[in-house]
Length: 249
Image 1: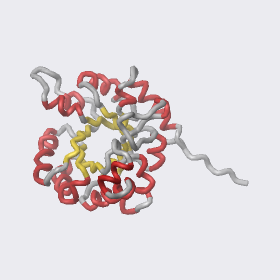
Image 2: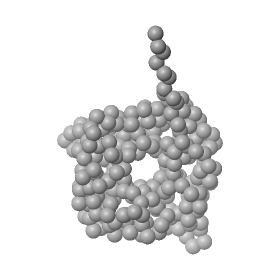
Image 3: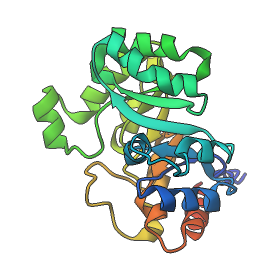
Image 4: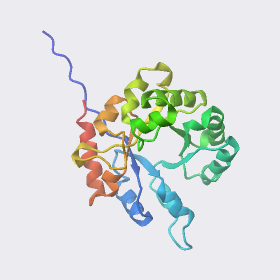
């Protein structure tokens, strides 16, 4: 009787977007501490964008400092407006040369996303956000008239039609997305992730999962913020998370 070959463990290299949602000085210190870990793919910026916009003279320039680390930057703007306005909002980030990924809301429909993709061109990538992980199943159903899986599938299809190749969804929808061949072209970036070693979920997230649940379900990258930036040892937190990912088989 032949034994089944054992599946190789998952490679943690490039699987983590580190969400630097904290004060700018602390964020830069953390970024420098963790950038050399192979599991870190890049840095996602949200509230730090506002801190940079209102940066005082003489303060360190956020994008310049992060760019020195040589990893992709994701500016999480979640743009949702008429196509022309979205393109105009994108242009300073595109022209800066520092930013490789920018989010738009898939609910902005095909023309808005398509114009954003065309504006970005070869300079970077548009990420379509479907349903926020901070929304519960009930909230999504009330807002869209559909269960979360159906809403995310619909928004993913619009994204593909617009030429988008990266999307955000929760780990809860990955199984439904995997079943649809037309959506396999999309790289799935999944927030709402808490490593098992951390022990408890994030209180501001509703549709959540562990790195193992997301990556084994089809996530291309997982987005991890609090488990890293709120830890006394951010690099140690990344190392523990990488070990957890590599234990997936």
